[in-house]
Image (cartoon, rainbow, N blue to C red; front, side):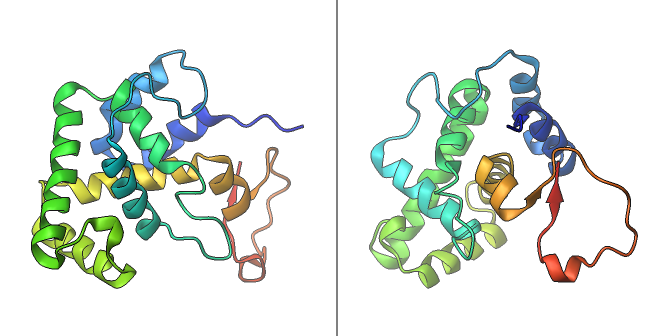
Length: 183
């Protein structure tokens, strides 16, 4: 049996993603937290949870491997908001979520989860380009990527998990594997 080191993966992802997630992740890594995505208190209404799930699934959709929703990314985001974000950071995120939902109603007269994939993509593109809710979409995208690639699905199914890397092979045929290795 292989030990799955989520703390090590979070530390690596923090280095890769940059400053926006550093403070909340720093607090999470410094604590002796129980592994998993169980928030200490509910942060989302059922409607917000559906919206976050839809956003995450557009960022990392299911293909030949499971998508962000199957990997538990919405629960990861809720846990981060509940346990590791300051009240201001949490309010900024929830405000951005509300602004995106308001734009969905204004533009399409539907909730974000009720939109077609093409409409969701168009709205998320607008959110990115026009900075709806500040930098909400970039922040949500970073948390989705972090949550996905620190999940067991992201680490073991999207990537090839090698707990103890073998010898160095400078001519390894990555084009044949078509996945990135993680350890």
